[in-house]
Length: 322
Image 1 (cartoon, one colour):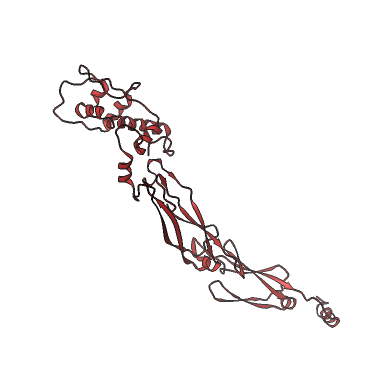
Image 2 (cartoon, rainbow, N blue to C red):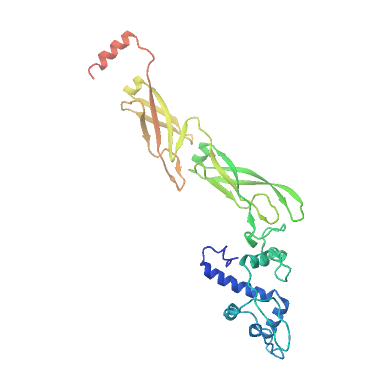
């Protein structure tokens, strides 16, 4: 799988093709009983030259090693499999095949020739059982991710929280038996997480033979708050004061998301749309929860709906010289 030209995109394609050719040639010998018998008794040279010594060497079987690679790679092929024993000669040819074909044969076990079977490969590499292939093994297709909403209050995202979520899935084994499984997973919400943050539980989706289960992904959704609105790492809050308070001053009292009482004095003259910034009272910054954004208090001035003549006179007297 590592050297498959189409599955090894991080490597040089020419190098991958050459490596996979060597692998397929070795597999060609090892998966054919007659060729493997010749190789075990007489070595690579007998396969390459097509000549069999009259008696097997006394040193015993020769084992495939790195030194044989170049000779295997230089052997040309254009005929059928299998050595034909005749007068001490063999007609041996490698039969080059497409990388996908040899890959399919090696890891899916669909060939009628001898070789690694699918059952043996899955049994030795799978970490899940139930007839499934190894993770990514044999080119198995992975099911598309399944996303679920993870509703969070602004308080959750401010202070952090733990939420328990249920994952329900079906498991179908190779015999067609189906069972439903529920699993409770715990999600540790970190202070400062934002809407759209994704928490992934790998391969927790439905299980089907021959398919790698989907990842189950929970996506943070922020529920609206009655008082505060989030803007990045800042918290926005609207406050309304009277015209008199906008001119003479006002002390604002707010309750923070973690339950503290916050006193904010407003002493300057406030115009409509005025914004008071309170440093470090915004949302925690997820990369460094010790730091916070700002609280931005947007102040709206409430004007009287009507004034009496006396009130107008007094305002002219007080404000007329300003």
